[in-house]
Amino acid sequence: MTVLLGCIADDFTGGTDLAGMLVKAGMRTVQLIGVPHDPIDVGKNIDALVIALKSRTTPVAEAVAESLAALRWLQQAGCRQYYFKYCSTFDSTPGGNIGPVAEALMRALGSNFSIACPAFPANGRTIYKGHLFVGDLLLSDSGMRDHPLTPMTDASLVRVLQAQIKGKVGLTEYSTVLKGEVAIRARFKALQAAGYNFSVVDALSNDDLMSIAAACADLVLVTAASGLALGLPQNFRCAGLLADDLVADALPHTGGLRAVISGSCSVATQGQVAAMRTTHPAFQVDPFALASGTDVVGAALEWADSRVKNEPVLFYATATPEAVKAVQVQLGAERAGRLVEEALAAIASGLVEQGVGQLIVAGGETSGAVVQALGVRGLRIGPEIDPGVPWTTAISNDSGRRPLALALKSGNFGTPDFFLKAWSKLAS
Ligand code: ADP
Image 1: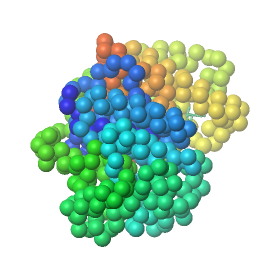
Image 2: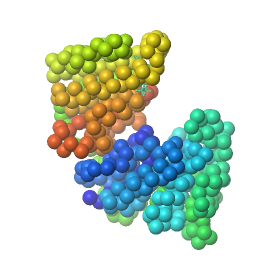
Image 3: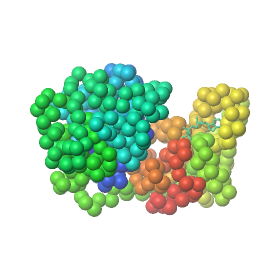
Image 4: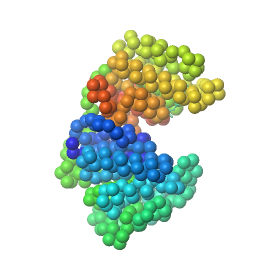
């Protein structure tokens, strides 16, 4: 296997975001959920691997240890360059974790220089004179100021990162970035020669990110938000390592029956559930029935048995805010959420046993529960259904398992006909 780029993301959705960017930029990408602890077949013809961790807000030592374990795994896969991906608002706890993780990865790779560039201009995250802006506001004036876990009260990335690491942090200013790749590379060399270990890099546009990425071709480690992924694949193309005409989002054929599981109560999902219910069989999962001990899962699977052979079927707990409130008042929000997630995950497992090979799951937490119940360890990223929601195929370490296509849609993603149109993006 010749994987070019090995990525470590500090949370799951961040990993998905990066994986999607890499596929769009022409790299065939697999996202793994956590560091695999046992042998796992991730498939063939992969250009980029993304290991998604949950290390954004864990204790520093834990985040560092987990990130180093991910790095070792990626090194064994033979990656040529490494990418530590964090949020474009540079979400850090007072103890780190971005700085300590970045520094530990750099040392483990035998390097003494990298960049820090959380810019993501398409989402309004820009960096000027080392200060991070969210739209028109400095980071420290944005909503991130009051984030419950990672409050960001200083917009100076040089200062924030410097406080987190032992090495020295410098800046590559916008005037240099505007001059392009050669000037940026020269600045990196000058900073490195002067004993700096990281450079924050100004960036206001995607063109800037392309120049910065080009200047990073020789760095063994980059640290950035997902925006930098726009430009890195081009380096591999220039080096003759990545074909120009690669179809990066092709998925292996899965076949199988089709179903949708929805535990999301977000507005977009409510519309999608309503649209599918009018044309397809739908089974409502009632939290009160679950709480009373009724065998809802058994009933759902019996109901599915004859129907799913003929057409896509829907299972939903999705409800209006008033209905959810009523459930939560009686059962408690945490218990209600858990009961519904467990039931939907058990239904998903039963459906796969009944022959479902193409499954859409709506809801971030719901997706987490389903993926866990199905023993999914990774996802090969395929064609996008709507922005931010690709079809994927599941990777598990049960090699005898039939192939499974999964679309994991969190919260407010997707158009009202999402559940209906999604199938047309997959080879049947
Ligand atoms: P989203 O991505 O839209 O936020 P999630 O799956 O992350 O969706 O979160 C929805 C939560 O609401 C889950 O914990 C789910 O179990 C719970 N839930 C779903 N339906 C109901 C319901 N009818 N009553 C109470 N809780 C529900």
